[in-house]
Length: 207
Image (cartoon, rainbow, N blue to C red):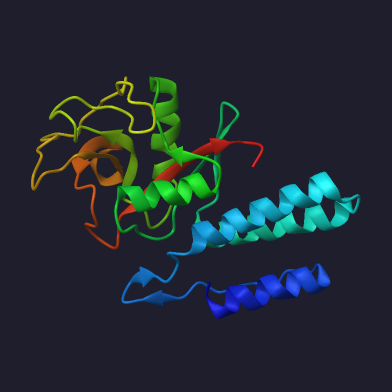
């Protein structure tokens, strides 16, 4: 755990008051690969407080602290159909890494299930600064051209390709939405591609 976050977390445990933590970067990549563990630890602590303590103010403060960390890592959320969608402010090592961030928040890589949800995601991307190509749930790694949600194995019901997509250039088995291509979909490598790439999580709105 980075020392600044560890110190802030210790300060909260001792005093009940969170402190702002700055996000550091190294060569364009965020120094954040242990953040899922931090978030999981905070979620567990919140659950313990809710279940075992009557001090509701401290539980609320902890949730506010968790939300503050989320605000550092992700853009302001989209709320749609009782779900929350979050576009990251930082790139990812690979699709597994991106999905782990989403899991740590109680969600998963965004799954586009119908045209209304697709339009909501397109609009969200269009108003999110610093994001052009955004990874979402969907892969054809098992069978080329057959796109499935990796979480459930069900077929992706909405595929709206940008011109020339999918091109499978360099073994591209993951799915993205592309702002500069009119919010259409494309395929991209599941591994690291660019420090400009982002990802979108989907989670319950009660987070």
